[in-house]
Length: 315
Image 1 (spheres, rainbow, N blue to C red):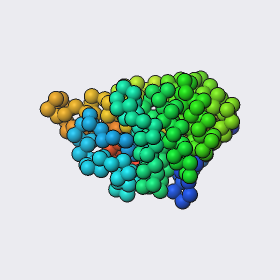
Image 2 (image 1 turned 60 degrees about the vertical axis):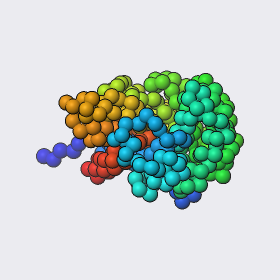
Image 3 (image 1 turned 180 degrees about the horizontal axis):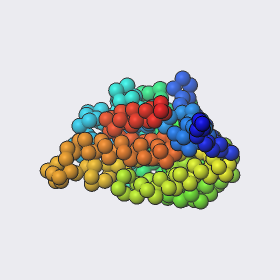
Image 4 (image 1 turned 90 degrees about the vertical axis):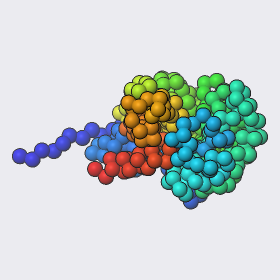
């Protein structure tokens, strides 16, 4: 007697969100089943990989990471082109770290100029993250939104403290909002409610649930992401049906296990391979948790994750 594997059909689905404009636009989301549960439903788009570009060359990165990128980090537009043309990124994510008042306190106009140069340099979608300072990010992202009003970008983080001016900027200039909450299902849902109540369509929101890396709380992040995805699919919860983005590169390379040299930790083996694997493992884990956009750093980690995700899809 033959065996038919049971399947579980979902009542809901993840919204599709289109990032970017024109021929370079990329659509994410659209799932009707849990990640890579292709026997239960559809997964029309593999998780997209956005490669980081910083507004200023990072000085604190380990040599194993900095050497992989080379001199392109001296100019954001050049860096962005290399991400696409050399490293195969689906998108570019500009990190406006220099706008942090506790660092360089770069002006909103300076930030807007950087983002404008990146948008002009590439045809793929551009994402933008502020420094994480709620008040400064509100001022910076409003100026960025205006500077690139001829195309559609996704920007954030919009948080409970600054979602109003950031959402207003998205409404005024046609952009997508990245809504960030601190690893909590109910807070993520509530922020989406607040943003949509301002008039922004639900298909112009990405959920950033926040995350740690492998070895640093990723289990909790994974659980929250899984619960968001289950609510969206099995409970047809309208305010959890947005695609998810995870800003994981900074978390993976913050870990001592990724950045320690072989001289510092000789028992841990080759530092370059260790760092690549730390980021790649973090990214793959979060993709299995439901991430639709993975923000990453190292070119070799990106290549490894792309191969892994395609292999899962081909099973």
